[in-house]
Every structure is written in C-alpha cells, then in structure tokens.
Amino acid sequence: MKHGLLLHAELSQVVAAMGHGEMLVLGDAGLPIPNGPARIDLAVSPGTPGIAEVLKAVLSELAVESTLIAHEALDATDGALPAWYASELPMPPQTVSHEAFKQLCKSARAIVRTGECTPYANVILVAGVTF
View 1: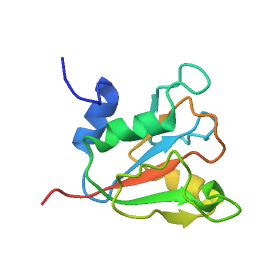
View 2: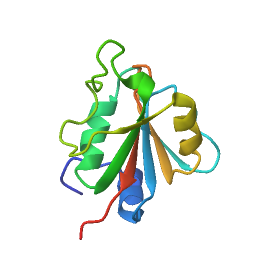
View 3: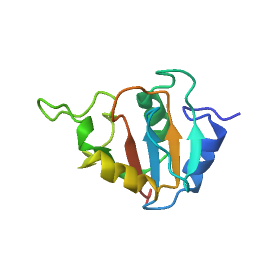
C-alpha cells in the first residue's frame, strides 16, 4: 500500500502519467464534465471530500507550473483568492471566465469531481517538470 497523502489508485495513476503542460481539473460537485477527459469521481456526499483536501493530496505528487480558476471564484469585494485555493502554490492563479474555464476542461487529461458545494470551487492544474 502507498503511504502519503494521495492514496486513490486511479488519481495517482493519472498524476504519474501526466506530461509537461497537460491539465488536471479539480472540480466541485456541480462542474459539468465533458466527454473526452477521464472522469474520476471522488464525491461521497455534499462537502466530502472537499476541494482543499483533494488539492493538497494532488499537490503532494504533481509538479505544477501554473493554475487557472474562474474569476467568479475570487472574492467580489476585494478580489482575494478563495479559502480553498492552496496557499502552498508558489504562483497566483490565472483567471478566466467560468465559461472559458468549462471550455478548457474539454482539453484536460482528467477531471476530478469532489464533493465540494462551494460555487466556482474549481481549479485547473497545469503540469510542470521537476528538472
């Protein structure tokens, strides 16, 4: 058995197979998943697992060069990042409209459905390299 944060076999396999520039989407329970990308459904019940938990586990194994979120996810009053966005990421996310985000999902290697029920709690992780 693996030890570490990312124990889910299918998700671990996708992360291991990703190449530079490929996209992995972590989505809330309501994000539409288009035909094409692999679908990894982790949702058990509303809020379980949350996107922050899944993001932390994925980041323990995936080299990330950039991230994208919908600008609708930013705080409407001050533009602050949402609380679920991983503070350990060294770069601020690029923002796009939610509609553009959904279009980008069509090109993802996989889309992970979480139990998160916070509106716009979705992130695209773009794989980097470790050298």
